[in-house]
Image (cartoon, rainbow, N blue to C red; front, side, top):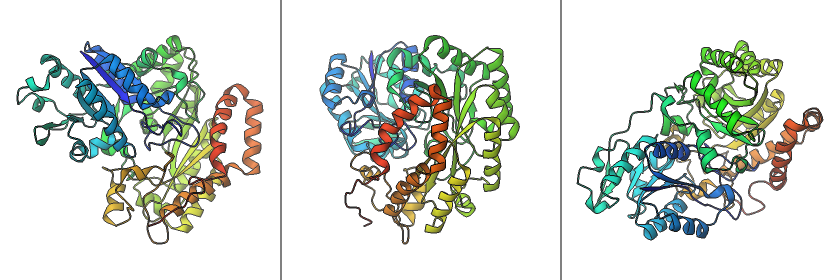
Length: 502
């Protein structure tokens, strides 16, 4: 049986739409994520004996017509289409067309249909199902059921789909929701993402502004025990328990990448909070040395890792930490349930620099308790931390999160037209607006903050110094990032088009 897993085209005339990241968009720095969850599913389905086509249309800015031709030639029995909130209507239209030309059983996956399965299936009667939350084994079990009926939905017995946990599906005129599938506890049993990359993708198509290019993104664990109101993955996909691969299994994937993907210069461990398990970090650092590994890596971290953890990271060749500081105001941090003390975060940055680790700082503005004054406090805070790089985003609330409920319940959502979550050009937008702090205020602040941070003499001097000292490490990614970034830093998000707060 043939199965297509598709990251569909969207706004390819403007750039590469990065659907798999936490806030899907065409990014101003050129960042473009691997289709990580589709890749996991591709590996699981291949291990189950199915023939797979993994097609990442945005990676090469493939048009709809090109996708349709490739899919028609492959002619799958089952189609899996990745989605996101801002692209959901486009993704459903692509899925519907493919359903019409192939007759394949068609399934939608991703954070948006996981949070809104009934609403999503209600948008198109041709789409049969949604696989919610962690969907690798849901798709595998569904595919095995379909294979038993030779792919003919008309031959399905009435109770066949009811037995697939994690599935929402259409049966005649009704939409049914099976029980949630339990989260995967033994993550070691999943295939290596890097093996899927090697077989199905080109690593050079994927770019993270903070990573050395080419890089490979992997996960060492899923879920996050913290409960930040805006963070979509723990709330919608993976839950609040941090489930981890064994250190041995993680080291083996590092070894695989070094041996079989020699072009990869850096590994990005994409866990929400890798550093939260201090003992595991220490064990990994020791195992890294014992294995004789050399490849550098970067990882997401909270701004509260202690000094010993930071030194262990650096000794195992961790080059950079991606850190969510979010705000420079303690009341705002508390309101977003960040559970982070600003003074602890300041000490963390100082210790990281002393350990020789770079920091990429992330800030989100527009959260509960935000005011024009706290925006300026955050900008000054970012400058005082003086990280290697920084990003400023207006709050983007996604269905299924506490932040979305807060904005909706207080009347702050300008619209529930999901296409407005991005601008017409596919850039990050904001649909949260309140008196004294409109959506345009937030977007404009982020544009101005980006200029204020990056166009400082102190920062430019620092970047030139790093370029001279580390030309191989910093040069390629800086040049690639600047090439895209320069288009936006002066003209801003809206590019001179009229803005509306109504």
